[in-house]
Length: 130
Image (tube, rainbow, N blue to C red; front, top):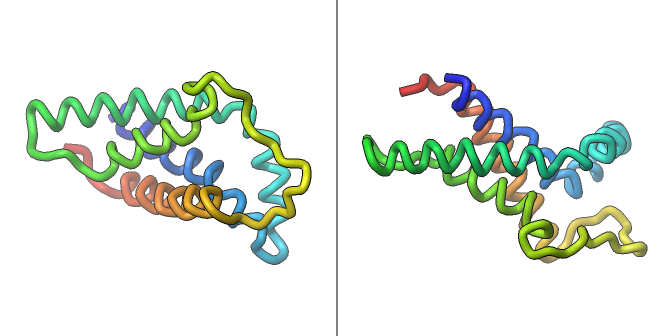
């Protein structure tokens, strides 16, 4: 039960960190969300590790003992990989000085995936463990 909660929370928080490029463009709340994301972005690697461990645990458990692999764990693994991508490749996180806050290209794809991860995490909170 605790692992399922950790997976759901990692999906929600990790999705938020991935989707912040889109969320900052929201009127009235975008600036506040951007400042909050800036404060917690230093802990993104912890969220990534939790997402990878919890997602991997449930992926292996459901792969071996059934009933089937669920989308919650696949999204968790992908969120963990996305958050840890620069650390896994041994590079520093890229920060562009000319960034206007608008997401485009791969950033837009990750932001949309982040929104999907938030929805999947919320759905996981209301899905019975089993």
